[in-house]
Amino acid sequence: MLKVAFVVPRYGTEIRGGAEMLCLQIAEQMSEYWDIEVLTTCAKDYISWKNEFKEGMHKINNISVRRFKVDQPRRMRRFNLYSKWIYNTKSSLDAEERWIKAQGPSSSELLQFIETNHGDYQLFFFFTYLYYTTYFGLQLVRDKSVLIPTAHDEPPIHLSLFQQMFQIPKGFIYSTLEEEAFVNRLFNVEAKVSDVIGTGVMPPDEINKLFRGKYNIKEKYILYVGRIDVMKGGKELFAFFRKFKKDFPSDVKLVLMGPQVMSIPKHPDIIYLGTLPEEDKFDAIQSSEFMVVPSRYESLSIVALESWVLKKPVLVNQRCDVLFGQCKRSDGGLAYHNYETFCQGANALLSDSELQKKLGENGHKYTMENYHWDIIKRKYLNFVDQLQPSSDS
Image (cartoon, rainbow, N blue to C red; front, side, top):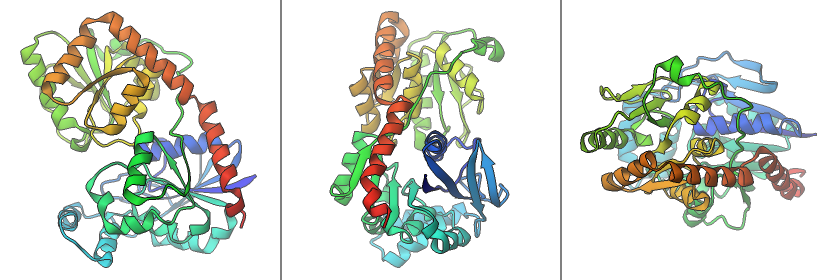
């Protein structure tokens, strides 16, 4: 059985971040084919990288997880000031490497383990391009490395140190066609072994239909699932929704689920429920009118797939190429690029049940044909088969 290491900044069932959740899902699904060990840090919080998990070996849902201490927590105020400078200055590689060390999570013990034990693994999968664990870890296992970049157009990806880093991996696994095109355009890595795979979704076996009673929500509602964050489009979503309620009075609510990073405005029709169990999440999706996905920075929208798998349409930010591409390919929702088009999309989905049904069914068909776990697992196996001659060396 192939011995594989998954390297990721954080790992755990309680961590809902995109790349971290992707790593957990792929590890659990591919464990029937590979002997997988996750190499990660003791950090739980991506803001501070504070050591919260116990170091050493653990079993999480039958996956072996080896945790290493973070050398020091991130000092966000200093890091943000340094980031602002580095993004707007033509700086040296040394200065940019100081930035990636400050970005973290810095773990000299994790890197030492990889350097000492790299011969025990046939492949190393690095999840998400942005962090210390990937930048420095890739350099230690060039001949057997795979990068799952989860990349999108944001200031740090244009730093020169990533031009060098993206030349290292033996192969790339992308989440969407748009991510693949963006990475190839920026780094010219078309010659590398690669595939567009993403992640799998499956409808839950049963939905308990208790959500409305449990959380005392009787009215129609639009649902947002994910981190409540400016970088996820939170500020614009709140501004649009509040103006929408003034311009088009109704009893419709905006229901939010996920970890809170930014302040949420006090409004009688904005309901924040925190981070809920998976069964409540799917129940909430099923009971909603549609899912709104306001982020401009995505490499794949898992929440859109989860909405479609339950035959619910989505309203997405057209300024995100990935979201707009998913929406066009699936014909599973509508897109907006400003307040006026947000209102048009929201009103159409709220008032036309036939449109809701048609778009939801289109999204369901697209998701089951492209993101069923059987399809995803087969793609991963085929990808590794292409790498085998080099990964056996």
